[in-house]
Length: 226
Image 1: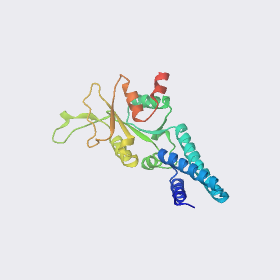
Image 2: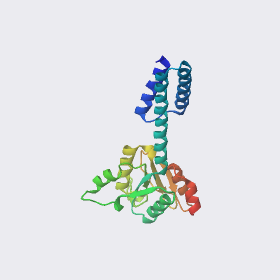
Image 3: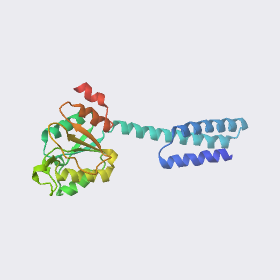
Image 4: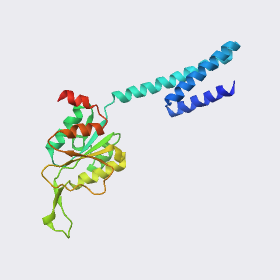
């Protein structure tokens, strides 16, 4: 067969192994295969026609497989792990917003223990999550030793900060979103967490739209149900 046909076979094998194919390559391969098939038909080379038809079949199979994977991804609800402190009102509001947008919220206390301690549960149930939402509710107070207690400021609990770092390392900071309070307190945010999306949590409810945008959710679902 021609060098052009050999190149097509190499490309098909490459995309079969990758499980994906760029749009421009898809169109180029389809055009090249069509040209080769017309050439073989003009030459009345039955064997060459059969070989090129097999290439066309392989290309269609790759396209069908990719289309199926895309459909599966569309129907699968994104899994959102929620890390929270002691503010139940804040936690429940975030869970409701996530559910209404068609996403799947996960909280550690809602999952079965199965003989595991907290660290093991965190490691197990964080597998395969798409995003982590960290609720920095002001449940503790802290201050520098040299400043004294008079300068104590509200801040999130230590376990919440630990899990913020855990998810930053596990799924990447671009998949971690932090909500922090802004009304009526001088909240002390965690240090050195630039790069994590952080959203002010207040009574205006604007945080819902901001959060769902960060999670890649369809905000129209939330707007229709409110």
